[in-house]
Length: 377
Ligand SMILES: *Cc1c(COP(=O)(O)O)cnc(C)c1O
Image (tube, rainbow, N blue to C red; front, side, top):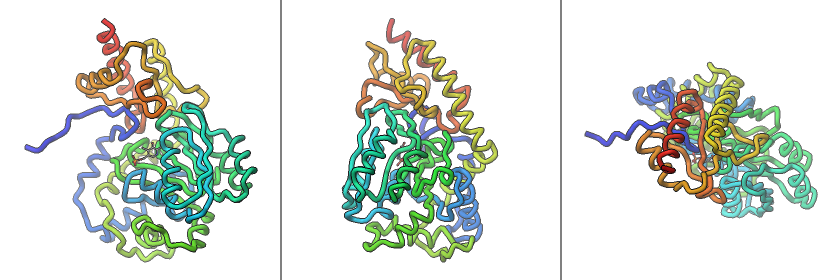
């Protein structure tokens, strides 16, 4: 017998609960990655991703690796050694952006915000005014480490006014909160399959507009990663739509994971993007009310809270690790630990995609209530 894992309810920072339909899609027979049927499926995935991102960008696809690879794809292709990048940091993932910039030979200009706060456009404006050499502005839309939403539109407007490109992390945002890539004028955007899309981990939807592509085409240094070089990947993903690619072999796509992504995007389209955002908001309200009724406190100010990722203050006298262990072992329920400034101080309760539903909230509130009572007795 093989080692089948337990069936858990995933209410942490990702991966999130996966709909049975998506798991069934994953189990369909594998076909060749250049089989005409698979090529047709990739085309459908591109169209559905454009719907989810709200973009007309032809260069919209899924990188064959997790969200972190989407991040690297953006920096590796858009940035050249010596480029100045304004990196806005208000949590773990902004810090990772900084890592990308320094490792790839960019010159970072760092703008830090306290954990639990959003990126302040006024500070972005000051930084851009102070240094006209900045070429790229990078920030996180939905900071999963802190549960904070930063508003991309004003930041993107400022970037454009100062002739900069934007690199935007919406790994946790896509499908869960409002996102309008074209309407907001975002240039290079990456996401992940395993958060609000409720698909298996390991794919990173990305989208690049004409301004981003122009920057890539004008490069004077080759893209330092062969695997992530978009000029090569484009030839694999684009073509039947007349975008000039050759559909040439680049790497073997994770065929079954693409089946799963397709299914999760079909489900998102059927529900409707706006309805999905509303469901996340409504479920967040229920969870927040229930937690407050238990005497628990949400850390992030309600005006900038991510509905899909809730930071809850760990009550005085409760052992963080023991508490989460009990939820996992007794209720098969996973919630997330705090990170960075919130390590040991907060739990992160995710309501992402298929996890954002009534039954999960009841399970979560019930398990927390009983466990708190047990630990306090
Ligand atoms: C999860 C996450 C990532 C990384 O995605 P992986 O799939 O774990 O590589 C990047 N940015 C944010 C904001 C995330 O929440």
